[in-house]
Length: 238
Image (tube, rainbow, N blue to C red):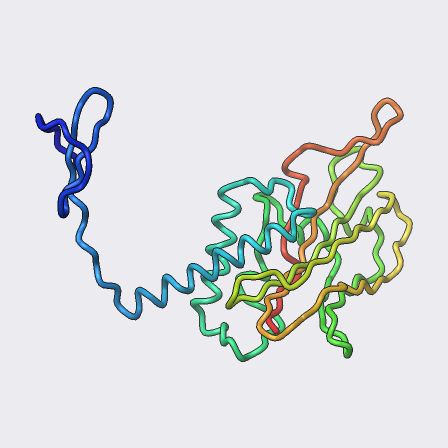
């Protein structure tokens, strides 16, 4: 805690710092440097990786994140990546087709993307080493939970790659599917996520739904947060 003093000086003398705040002068001590243990250094290094990875993923998945500046969401994402890095599932030299923790992350609170979009999805790596997303045929009114008066749905899909050790971007991809909210079947689709999948990269595929209704003859999208689901639908480590 700083102490008020009568001496009117500013600067540093050994472990004491003298400074002025308003019309008064104060002094405080500088904490002694604490030597970190190996475990503490390891944890700090992992947290640094999680922070850089989380930032990289957010920037690349921006098209599917309804509230990208949400600090709580940003913190949750970093914590989720950190939890994975601290688990036995993360081995730098060992690929993982379904990364735990990260694969279940939701960018919004409330109903998850899987609860609103009841269509089984699968992200795999093709023989050419490129990620692919398979969406089976579905009927919108039967497979998608939507607010009243919905007439049209946009499904936003984005994929992002990040080198975990270096925290650098390896590539990103974005596309969208548009369809009427009715009983017409949407055919099966195989979407090639055209981004590289080099060794040591975390590849995350995410999806969000945007619902539209008609007002005064114009399509308008819903702003009801309960119907703005966005989350990860696949996460793999190469």
